[in-house]
Length: 113
Length: 110
Image (cartoon, rainbow over all chains, first blue to last red; front, side, top):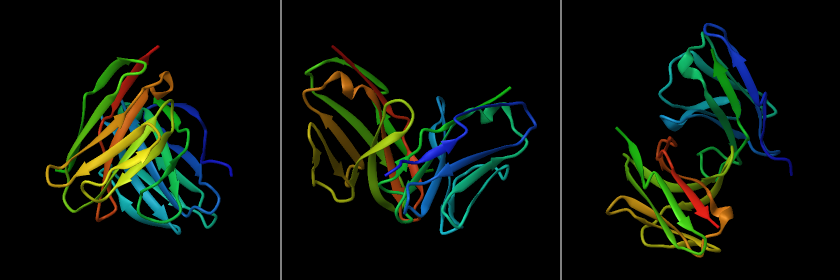
């Protein structure tokens, strides 16, 4: 069974631009969660989607948004990029909503210059 | 504010040693505690603990939760170089929100 895939793996953007990251969950998994990981803050929860609906949201500004499609694939969008948005963005999928026993993807490394 | 604190932040030991990693938490409406291993990019799930005093074991790794004192430990016995990684502790509350600690970076010397 294929694992969680994320595209692109690396991305360089400039301040003020926007970016869209993609995540394909493990086949059959309906929950997708997104995380931001930085050296200073560690791994922080962004949001969780289940059956195309946002179930939960972390403490991030409205510039961070996401959506989930009917095939459970999810996208995350960050608008008006700031230098502090440079991070590893991880997505994780699980069979059901709730966030435990998640399977993580390899991440997208975003650098904002 | 909910928080999860892991200690030590980093640890260097020799192969064959036993290590204990700590995780303490202050989280409202606690539901479960999770341990992950992060080697390069993707964290991999190790354990989920919900009840106090019940040890979860997988090979050389084991973990236990103390809900009265609000902490968990992860033990690794007979460490191997392949155990080198960042170990993440996270707590899930009843609103299904997950809070991660900053991790313990473990390095095993051959």
